[in-house]
Every structure is written in structure tokens, then in C-alpha cells.
Image (cartoon, rainbow over all chains, first blue to last red; front, side, top):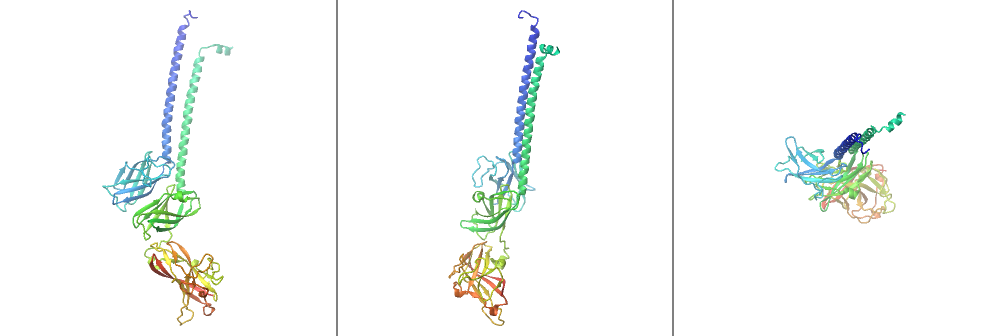
Length: 160
Length: 335
């Protein structure tokens, strides 16, 4: 059989074809596995974010404007079922004016700074915003709109 | 024969096996991804449901806070007392109490009330709450507004128990009298009242029997001061029975009564804090003291069968400032 050359070339070609097929198959398999894993991770992340976003609830317990200092204190409560509610921006506005704050310090009601700068479930906290050189007009209706890091928006009205 | 041929023929078998193998892998991968995606969608749907439930339960929450009374204690501590009633169909947890001093334009809060007072209300449950909020500079004469915050983010305004309009309070006085709760007592012994403190709620009183009166007085002072009733307070029943004669009538001076109905021989001033209601007993013909000889009765002649007027004359101090008030409109019929 070793000396016989008649069957060698078909065998070699078969081996080559099989090898190529198997290699391509494995490559396709690995690629599809990678793609599906990536898809699962991305989709899972989207779902997780959406789920957390759906569970986010925030209420404005109280707002107090100090006209002397030009500061407004906004007291919040996370009454949703999602932890780590992070305030990304706070916009104060009325019909003719608006101002957006993206840099502020979130504190507990006792005045200590919240270390992770977010509100967990049931947590209360407040921010102090300086509106100077503008000032809020006593008796006018203003809106405060909070956008969270997950993209949820909450809006309330207040009268200084 | 054909089956034997097929089994002996090695050509093509590997292709079939390979194809089946890859098809199985492809199906298992896609099936896994498919079911995983279904699971993720299920998780999302669950979250949507939960989200809707949060809002639904929030709307179902219905709590009433009434009988609010503000008392400023030492150290500018504003004591807020109120009755909370859960009118909704879901359990409620109170997490914060806010108080706004309208006069000073200052505010305060108490976010430990749930921890301290365990303010969880079942549907239909009522609880009396008394919590302290510190507002620097607050005083009893200030005007306050307050509200509770629930764990679902709802705010519950506290309705004040006594909201006498500022223009009305100086006209009708700082003490109010409950006509429905007016009562009289007969004597079990010479110095002990019968059936105290219930007495007999009636405006018809017996003649020829020693009696005492009980009146429920509430302090609704707009400045939230404490009223101190002194011994000069009395119920005066003028003698309108004998025409054309000026008679002193009957005097029932205020007395102290212990929990068993015994009238004490000497009188000690009675304090009524803002918002507080006390049963004040009038029994003695003498100012400041009582003995069996000081009991008062309406003799059958000439009182029996007549309707007579009486005046509750309250005298004392509001935070050491002298105060007097006449509560009229009480009529009695002597049987």
C-alpha cells in the first residue's frame, strides 16, 4: 500500500479539503460564538440600563431659595427601587430663562457629603446651587428638571 | 443489500457527519441566543411591570394628617402633633417631616421620625404623632406650615387643628368651650363627686341637690401660649327668677378634683397648654377653697321650673399676662 502511488493524491486532497473545511468551520464557529457573546453582553447591558432606568424615581421634597445668598437648596428623595441614582444635570428654568448645572455636591440631610455622590434606594439628599449673578424672582413659577446618569428626567415646579 | 452497500461505502459519510455536526452546533448556538434574548425581554417586561406598580401604588397612597398642633418648646424646638390616618388601600411609611416657619421664612425637618416613631400605617390605621423639628428663632406666635413625606414620595400636608383667623381670635377669645361636653355632677359624699369624670351631660339640672359643673375648655390661643386658670374663675348663674330684685344668684368657683372625684380643699392653678383640652370643674361657693359647706344647690323655690342663664367666667394668665374671658350662651333648666 505504501509503494502504491495510485491512491495517494485523492487521499491528500481529501485530507486538505477536510482540513480546510474543519478549520473554516471552527473559525466560523468561534466567530459566531464571539459575535453572540458580544451581542449578549451589549444587549444585556442595554436591558440592565433600561431596567434600572425604569426603576428610577426621584421626588423633590422641598426647595428653599435664599435671596440674600442667591442660593437654592433642593432636597431629593429616591423613592424608586433602583440604587445608585446619580444626578447628572439640574436645570432651573422659567418661561424666559434657564440655567443648567452639571457640577454640584450631593449631601445627606445632615450636611455630610455623600461619598458616592448618588442616592440609593430610600435615600434623601440635597444640593445647593448658586444662581448668582442671576436671581430668582419671588412669586414666579420656576421649573427644576433633573436628568440622571441613566438618562431619566424628572421635573417639578416651585415658587421661590 | 442496499443497506449493506451503504454501510460499506465510506465515500460521503464524513460529509454527512460533518454537516450534521455543524448544523447541531449552529442550532445550539442560535437556540441559546434566542432563549437568552427571550429571557432578557422577560426581565425587561418584569421591570416595566414593577415600574408601573411603583406609580400605581403611589397613586393609591392616601394619607390624611389632621389635628395639627404646633408648640414651641425650649431651644426653638417646634413640636408638631397630628393624627395620621391611612385612607388608602396600601401600607404607608412616613420618612420625613418638614416644618416651614412662615413668619421667619425658615424651615426644618425631622428625617428620623420613622426610626424613632415607627411610622408605618396599615390601610385604615390611625396614629397620633408627635415629633420635634428645630427651627432657630421659632416662637409660639409664629405661623407654621408642615407636611410629611412618604417613602413613595408623596407629600401630606398637616391640617391645623385650631385655625382661628387672626382677625377673629381677638374677638371670641383664646379659649373655646365645648357645648356638647357640658355636664353636671351630684355628690357621692360631701366632698366627692358622683360618677366623675363622666357626670351627666345635660342642660337640665336637679333642684334641691348639691351639684357641680364640668366644662371642657380648649386653649386655642393664636400665640400658642399656655393658659393658667386661677381661683377667680367661676360659673355665675344670675338670679333672673325673682323679677325686679337684684340678686347675686349662684356662684360655682373652680376647684381641683383628683382622679377619684374628690374635690381638694385648696385650689391650685390649672395650666392648659396650647391645643390642650381640660375638664374644668366648678363646685365651690368660695373663691380658692372648698369644703362641704361650700357646695351649691338650686333650691326648688324659686329656681325649679325656670330656665336660667349662666356664664363661664375664666380668669388667669397667658404666660404671666393677665387674661379673662366670659363664655356666654349657656342656658340651664332647673327641674
